[in-house]
Image (cartoon, rainbow, N blue to C red; front, side, top):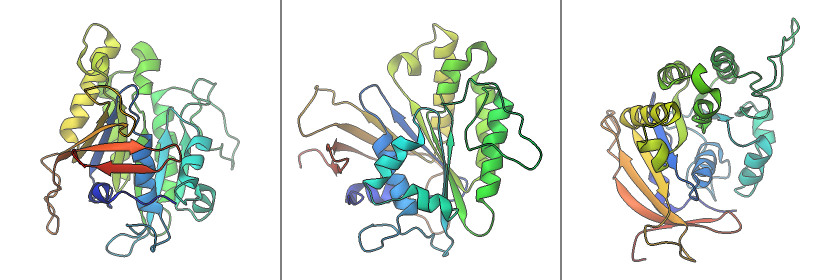
Length: 278
């Protein structure tokens, strides 16, 4: 089982209340491996092999709600299994929940019968329906003790697939509503140059506005990209880590160091994180 890389450990530690962590990717450099390390950090149960326990400093159990608009549960289960996590068992213990935001997104919204509830999949692409599905699942996971971390994978897909029905402001307001219901939030977005800096189409304008707004709000931003000099056999890409103004300002917190690291994702999903020159 792969351990969390030592250099990465401070950045995947349990976050402060109401914090926002933004993970950005570009084509060819995905944040999937980072999301899996956050799951490993928050849900890991074997304290002898994991660098971080699944309890907060005050002893409360950590729970995770993963909402994925790009990948199905089978993908995340396979990746988590390689890190020693059984998401099915964690779900049975009410420590983990998953919402499929893609498979049924464009089907007609279901009309649940009284006393029944559909599976954890967003059915129908109306924003209010999406908002309620996530909010209701958050409420269910919060039952009992524990702090819930909300992880949202590729929320920007909604901008790309909704046309004129959705803009950055409405999506940002929905995210604020979800953040208020969770202990903290981790969000992945694409940051490719045409989307991050273009203004020729409504999609480019909305995506850039959402990305810029969330980057300013975030307590921590981890951006992965390919090497500027091209490909290398032993380097997958670069992870640039920057901290926001709010990060590390709690009474017992220290500001996390901003830095730029190299990383390599092996064929067995093991990840090596190292500094330049190592």
